[in-house]
Amino acid sequence: MIEISDKDFSLDKIVSRARHEDVGAVVIFLGIVRNNNIRSMEVESYREAALSELECIRDEAMRKFDLIEVDIMHRIGSLNVGDNIALIICSAAHRKQAFEGCRFILEELKSRVPIWK
Image (tube, rainbow, N blue to C red):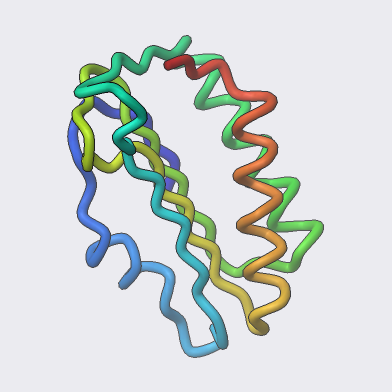
């Protein structure tokens, strides 16, 4: 699942989708808005381009790291300190694949996807 939304996401619901009988590891990255001398922030995106690029990144990661399941969620709109902002979940047969895939997706998201703070 890839989603860009102004609504929060349910971590438990998404994690349960990542669990399969062939999965030996599920790695989760949860980004939250930190108190960096701010009380809130606005997050915007060019939604169609962002979704398309996220799909490309997911497909690249799945091939490169032999991932079984990948979910990417990103929030937009007005967010406050402590709010969830991004979620990446990668499942794989082995932990190394899941960790490396998650890191790859995060770094590519930051450099390639049109989402702005």
